[in-house]
Length: 170
Image 1: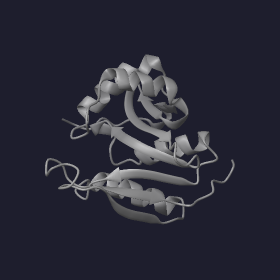
Image 2: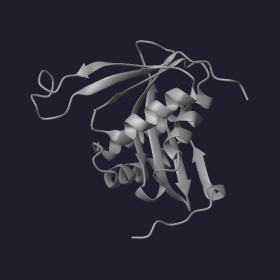
Image 3: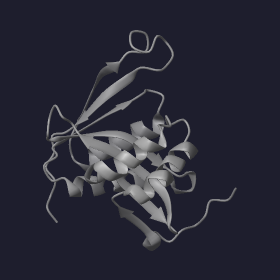
Image 4: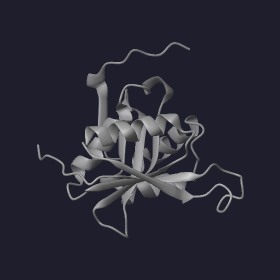
């Protein structure tokens, strides 16, 4: 399958809505090995968490999604939960652009947290690039242990804490 050449001027970043919830679910389903949650969850995220989620659309089709929420433990921390980019749009910095779009909507954020397995090379690259772009560091620690929490049914998840940083107002 040939990769479609696209015009970046037709790529739109925005907040999701209930209208895009099902398309987000379908995108996640296409993005193995991401964990697919119920379509209901993506409707909830797209309705109640619009300021901490972002979508990319191209030719009226959702081709990228980043979901997150403000941590209830620390109101200056954005937790990034899922990042999904359609196969034809990977490797072009779209995930980074979506996260930056979310940060523009939330100027009180000073830290980003996420969890990543050591085998998830694309997420490791993304969050290292994000840390570099924000001119800050990443602290890593075990969050969910493969043996203790997952009974060896899932790789260990490492908590990445990126920050502190201050965004420049545009």
